[in-house]
Length: 179
Image (cartoon, rainbow, N blue to C red):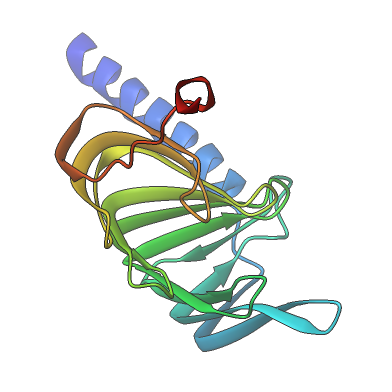
């Protein structure tokens, strides 16, 4: 009899806890299908985002938008050259302007360079990309795999973990040696 009573008390406590958790869940502000968002700055198109599904949580205290079925972003550099990123999933944190891309992430630049990884973070404010996941990068000078990437959007300044692959390095003479 005591064991049965303890079981009922335990279930009652769990039911109450679940009820409290469910009342705290926040619903999205809205959900949209087959979206196309155009980001502009001074009437100049910066990026075009398309996605099969967009879930908007900007009504929460920590505002974000989710792309649970993947997304594609075409963004333009200063010379209006087109670059593209696709991923199976994405989340945009509105206040920090940080974008978390996950699943088969592929970034292709206008010059043909390609970066592939399972997760990539894009800091839209500083135009910086980073990941702690293994990635592959290929262009005319580089073809390597590495773990960890920290780079500007033009890949002119980057740091990685250990590299595996081919890297072409040009050697310049020191100005003191040219006398």
